[in-house]
Image 1: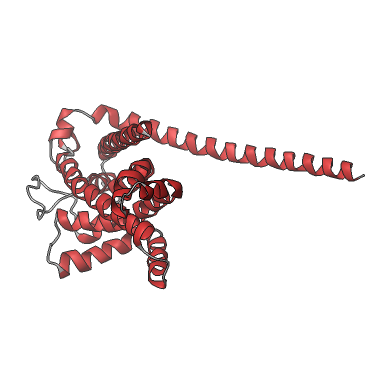
Image 2: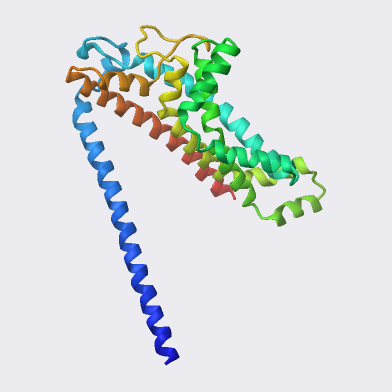
Length: 289
């Protein structure tokens, strides 16, 4: 009798497992199909408008003359400042919290705030950047203000992922390093970080992927949608590709929808190139271990 009941429970678990497996598989297929349909639509509209003139022209009221040059260069400037700031500050914070900070109310408060900041809407970071960087520090509506705002936006992502990567390193490796006479900093630099780099780079991919596509914080701090010049310093006004694409898609002329699709393709190519480089570095460090 007991054996029959146990067999019945096992069969019920298997049926439940199959139901959820099918549900998750169907959900994945729906998401992939939606993505494929979106990409097909963007390609069909934008591929014919994606040429050298589109990459080298500034924005224009005429669709045939519109280009993404200013927004493309502005995005490069923004990411060139945001990426190193995010990586250095985020990884340094993770190292401090995991390797140096003691389990006190203050460190637990920092951990709680970091976890909460990851869920704060991006528009709030825009208001913070407007208050602190634009008005209080008088950086005005510049690339530097935008980069610092985006750094604050994505810092929680890379901090949390870096903490998880550092925490995953076995404690035995640290003890072995200490036994050989290394101090704490030498152990972190020569043992912990090389092993944690793949996980840290995964967090960097996620954070920079979010930063390159954000629009709301930059609109709040004053990134404009039409610029007929290229920025030359950190304190110049700027625009970025997401804002330019949004501006084109909101115009009434039907041709601008095709121009916006071409801009989306350029943004996707830049994003995939950044991710491919980060994945290459991650795989390179994984092979060394």
